[in-house]
Every structure is written in structure tokens, then in C-alpha cells.
Length: 249
Image (cartoon, rainbow, N blue to C red; front, side):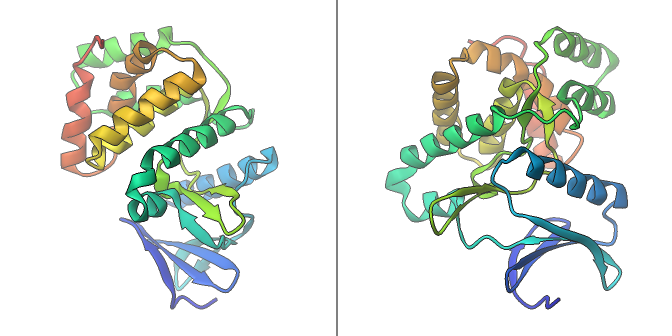
């Protein structure tokens, strides 16, 4: 495989294209368990029928682990929004429709969202009383079995040349409550500095899914705390600032 055409660079991984293959190469310090788990999640989602790139293999290249999958020719929704800002609301509607389509699927072999969040909250840099409050709230939230992407962002949706949306990056997928996944996406918009986009996204999600904003907002501190254990200090501070916001209007 040739690694001379870089198509994306992330904090701990680089994505290359070699013909019809997309090769995601992880840094040496990336945990083997996380890489194999991402590949397993991808394979499980592939079985559901959701449009995702076909997984070819998991291998090592120059001592680094890599996941090889089919290359999808097209543009991400993030690129489309950047190139056509006047159509942003149109793209956001499509974005929400795709998310709701994903959540219409089930995949029983996936990790339970509540279990994952419970473990993450226990690792968060919070005092014992706050962790207890968050765990109590989490336990009281409805348990669902919808496919929840866990990192649903416009940059993770590729529109192929025939208009078919392909969803990538399934490292954080779980089965659980769709409102929690919406809270995560809202926070992703905020972390990217797009507050207006976050508000417009949540309005659309709640309208199309017939979910109250108050219900999604009840997930915000839980999701923020669980996500705070990853990322840089600035992101951590932002996410933890949501933890003490108990009631939303």
C-alpha cells in the first residue's frame, strides 16, 4: 500500500488514499485495544445496512496499526457547508435526517451507551458528590437501543458522487438513547465555535424527532462529563463548565 496521498490528519492518526482504498494509520501510542474495537464496531455497523465504507482489513504498516476500508469519492457535509454557506440550513436538515435514519437501526452487539457513560463519569475530574449526582441522573434516563454514532459531526458524513451519504468514524458508537447522541452533536458544534449552528441543529433535531429540548438538555451535563476525560485542557474546561448546569429552559 502506498502512503503518499494524505486526505486527513487528526491528533493521533493520519488517513491516506491508495486507489480505491482508504487507510487510517494510527500513531504508535494509540492503544491496540481501541483500534481493534473501532474495527469491530465498524464491522458490526456494516451488518446493519447503514451506508458506511466497506471494511477490508486491519493490519500493521511500518510498525503502526492501520484500518483499511473502501475509499468513498465525494465531499463531507462540513466541506459542503463551508463552500456553500447560504445553504447551511438545507445541509443541517439533511444532517439531522441522516442522524435520525441511523437511530432507526438497532445493533444488539454494541456497548450500551449508559454503561460507557457511567465508566467515563467515574474517570472525570469531578468531586465525588458531582459524580454521584450525574450517575443518579444517568440511571433515571430512559434506556433505548438505538444506534448512536457518538461523534456525529458534519465532517463524518461523506456525500458520494451519486448523493448517497456515507458515515465514517465509528470508534465511539453505542446503543442507547438518541437524545444523548443529539446532546453530543450539539456540544461538538459548540466545541467548534459554531454556537448558532448548534442552536439550529438542536431545533431541527427536536422538531424532526418530536423530542423536547428540555429532555435533550437533561443529557447535556451527563454527556459533557463523560466526554471531558478525552481531549485537550481547553476542551475539558469547556465541557466541565456544562456539568454544573443542572436545569435548562
